[in-house]
Image 1 (cartoon, rainbow, N blue to C red):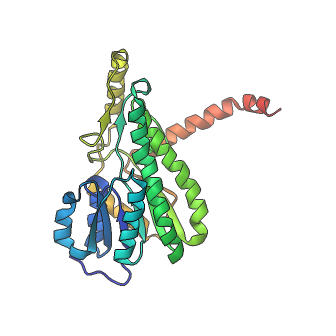
Image 2: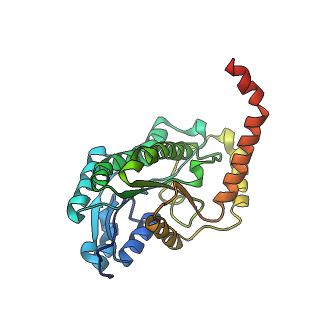
Image 3: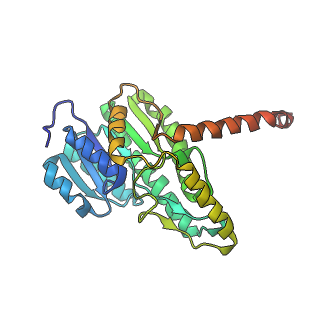
Length: 280
């Protein structure tokens, strides 16, 4: 284990049991930083505790519990004395066409991906304001700026995360706090595997569902990104003097964004006469 140094950072990472959260925790610990790592089941963090000792603080947390979020952030601050990087990573993808979504499906998606991030952010801000520094990493997705059929609930959650995070960045800049919205493309995590949830399929959509799957495979020309490699990119972000508000992870997102935004601009320009008609 690397020795902690005077300039090491203290991290608070939600969803640290696997995927991005785990890889970024390991990368931070390997270079001598300290990490408060949260998981629903802290036994998934036992190997990190054994390897890194007191540099890692495992915290049991369901981010949908607002009181627990505030308690966990306070516990991390009490243990380490400061918070430098707060990573809202906990989340999952829900698969289902709009008509297939139950109220529970949609509410649960928003509770975890939006409200969970909101509560952790609110819990951390007083500590970051007091110390006059800090960096919030909000883990969104290319699905936070574009959208595809079959994961509308997920898109809704990430678009909401992006919206409040862009406002947040303006609100906290004077306190020396940075906000970066991380927008990964497809990575070899468990996002679409055992951690995903699915609505009950309606047969009426079966033919379209098959086309959506074919389109998805056609888009996946570059292959999934490597979660381990993503850690180096995240370290670059947190070490930057002036980090960006948004940053893609992976090769594919830029092309998706360019096509989407060029299409939006073309449509808005085509219908500008209607916009001006409405002006009066």
